[in-house]
Image (cartoon, rainbow, N blue to C red; front, top):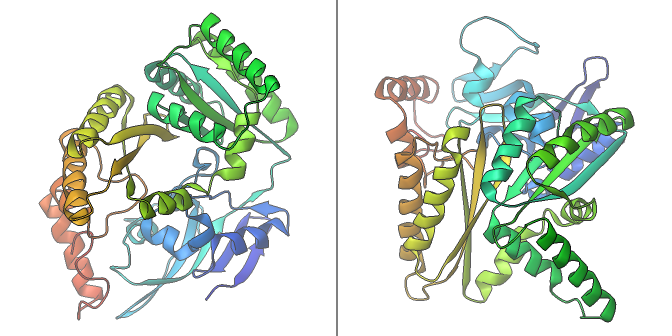
Length: 389
């Protein structure tokens, strides 16, 4: 269940069995000069079928799309038979089954095979940092880049708390030498000259493509950086991020072993609501656990809005850690709901988010989904108690 089945180079489509893990899938394509371009943080330990079932988003989905946009066709085994969707670029033939099965989290069947869109490996890439005076100015920059339809692979904006954390982590284990001291003094003076103070935030922006395309798109972005009072910080930040982008879960495990809790949650909203939801989300998290530190970054952005990805670091309650976590989860989930934001952008629903998914979904829609579930899973054996069932 983890094999590379075929590659249609003319159509840029590849077919895999759904149990294949991210690294094996990507290597299979790279060996033939292609890439899927789907790199969720769980990339090393997650499968194609899992990505589809949970409707995941990769870190470079600005260029390559979320998994439901990448999916062309699939094979699904249900208790009442096998479903195979057509390998078609587009159609107008009723509800799109791929979109119903993607994100269904195993409620309708087991995904065994999928055909997905692939791309030629990019000739070059340019990933770089930009420092902005504030989170709100960074959001304005992201919105303008998207509205001007400048192709990017990734635009990731860290708020001031996350920017400080990454600066601290980047300095750990480094000896204070005269050269480093001088570099830090120069860096601090430049930031002062540019009026980049305590509220400064960092964007990591990625460009992939031909050398000509990357050069042209970077040229289009430079005046927008200046317009929004940004400071180009070079490619070192981007290179460091690419090198360490899958490391955060390992750091989280180490912290939890030492009594420091870490959790993440994410949602999305339109640009007119981003700043309010950012502030209310941070306030809700820090209120839910006294002594905690909350931070946020925009991980994915679109024409009409963006994904807000929160992290909370907190002293764990050694006596009642589950109660502490459930309280925090309820408070932040309610904040999302009250702001008209989905309970998840790419982490899925499962059991923990089920209450808020059902509250946000109209009753007729829930009735229809449950009826469909009952029709193809009459004995109710597929992942009961999750999402909407």
